[in-house]
Image 1 (tube, helix red, strand yellow):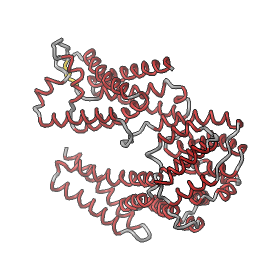
Image 2 (cartoon, one colour; image 1 turned 180 degrees about the vertical axis):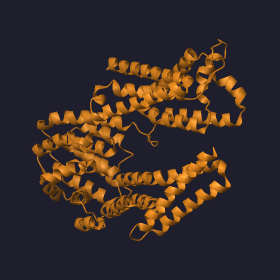
Image 3 (cartoon, one colour; image 1 turned 180 degrees about the horizontal axis):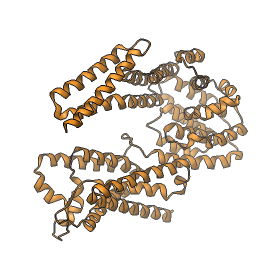
Length: 516
């Protein structure tokens, strides 16, 4: 054990030293705070290793995770803050990321956030100076940032003029972050024939198969100019917590104008103007109010259908993520129940609790025995066991609850728990062997997730859906293979929960199709 602790501590210290060397060699100001953080991290690793070796591995692993993972989380948080209309917060997050990892990519993100804040606050409209301030060497990157900054200033004519260059058009179509801006520029200044051409280009773009808010929202903007108002309104509800109210209202009002509902568009815009405080977003809303679009013609009917189908599947797949802010009361309730049971387990005598709650082979038929097929899911070996199950529960439970409903999510989880317990009893041949953990329920939700995607042609046909299924299949195969070689008892519970959850989800989906 000491050898493992020593290796972890040595790894942590080595990474801290590499980090310090990179900081010393970095050019420019702003290295004092990062160097101080790195020195403290290196010192903490050494001190803990000497004074508390029994927790040295955990502490070293923690500081490693802090150094390697937190800057990436902060950068993503900065991007989200910028999307939701909080440019000052975005700059703060980007600055903190630089303090932890002041390498060129992180510094570039900070410079980009600073300039975006200035455009968002209407403190500048000098696009050329902003691009020069970034210090980019690649002409392609310079043009991409120029398009992005022009979109902040609503200079659509200049953007369209840039897009007339075939190289720049190809460049814009390989950056999902630019999709929405390009669609707005074309939709505001060009006719329906150029818009149809843009639809074809975007739907065929390789990045359209990726996950992410930029891809989904780019499709929503495209749907708005095509006049698919119903799917745009659903997208607005789906992305409400991930984008600013001003951006969402602009796109919804655009879709309403494209179907000739001028009154609804005006109401949407005026309601958003009451609460929107970001100058750039207010200017965009006022522009839409002063420049209403003409209704879309039947020339775009086929494009509307194609975009709407792709956007619906995109919104479903985008919900497969660990977004704790999204509403999911059943999933949260189950997570709290499992966590509370573990807290009770920590202060109780382990032996009697296992004898009372765990599933034990063989099945004896006692009165209390059926209750064990549920209660065993509340016990866990340790914090790691609990943590992995909670992550799986929150990840797949949210998706199932959103797509199949709260009642179905609860039934699938309980069905997975029951299926896992029964599979364990059917396979285990060791008298007195016990099974504990929420893995059966989590695997039930996992199976339901696979069924939801795999049984829906609109989800499994796009590249993104196929990749999700392949990824989920690899995870399931890896889990079951590990179980087969190292933990046969839990492997049977995992397999039983997976099958039970998938079957219940399939029944729910078939029932819904029959009703419709």
